[in-house]
Image (cartoon, rainbow over all chains, first blue to last red; front, top):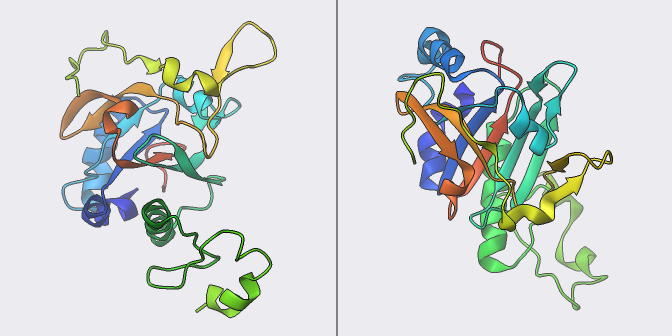
Length: 150
Length: 82
């Protein structure tokens, strides 16, 4: 949460809005913001913290855990047309990676803009692929597996 | 973005069903209830929720962010590490 908060300006600069959702009430969000989050990041978390009390929204997204009565840790990337592009689902013990969020957002924005596709491990500036007849069976000429890691 | 009065009686609408996302509505098998399921490549179900934002309480609809990239983060609970 706070890791995303400190990168909020950079995400906004990419045209990205953040919405955080849990089953806590808005009053609980307020106290958490005042008592803890504002001590971890200056000014507190700058994006909306939504209340999904009862879990109806989480249920609609398939992320509500009825046994624990909480929304599990899932991060969706939604494009400007309102289409879900990505979903990352983790059990509660492991937190998210904000750098990977940036990479995926930049990749989706590149894909939407250019119609190209981004191979495994793609980072901004690295080669993309142009899908189509000519590429079928010829990825090995265009892309080396080592580039997924460098 | 409608200002919500901060009183307990102003409820947010929760999940919203409309023509735009009826494609995402499925029967849960019992035939009694319709549920939405979110899938990559499909329209994100719209919803309205009460929220803490800009130092106050407001109601927020996902559809208000149409035209922008949105990162929607569900997390298990306040006062945990997230």
